[in-house]
Length: 264
Image (cartoon, rainbow, N blue to C red; front, side):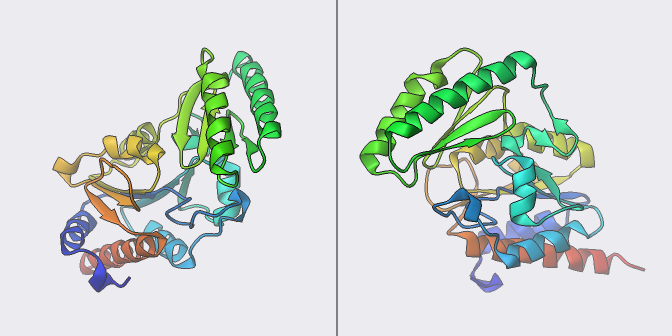
């Protein structure tokens, strides 16, 4: 996809947003900056997206964030990104300064129980795995048969997902159980307030990104872009991670033009 292939309506919206006084550009990682892969640890980012994110983050009055369900440390290692790009992990709850919500001793005890239960489930169904994070744990079923995946997810939903004080997030072939509330939408709100953004552009591909889309303000110039298929609250849609790189590159270029035009 080249700049010429971006839908005209989206091109016009991105051009307007790139003219905002202060702009926040944010994106999910898996399925956006990096293609979805069978093994989560193999999710290598698209170099073109990394280049665009980094270039935009270095421009005046422009903030760039990657908001992911991954643990923040893992996100940093996989993406290779660092300041000035802002990394937010654990579905919007984990910032550089720590978790937005305190993880108490009681919550850690609950997390230990959840991890044990999900590992027990994974032992019964081939191709399922458990990922452990500081405030949550994830059951991955992408590599299981359809029958085993459904059965494992059902066991998780009717088991630990139903326990008190467990916060459930379902995505593509995963179910994540957290002991604190998480929301990419709240993360966007915090970032918007922190930098004083006049407009926000957010790209996401998963069910969890709908919380971010729901917090956007299209009436003031915010743009939500859904990557791939599926129902969405986003106002625009593109096909895949190649298109993400094109969109990010276009925004970075438009923002750079604005910066150059503003020089005396």
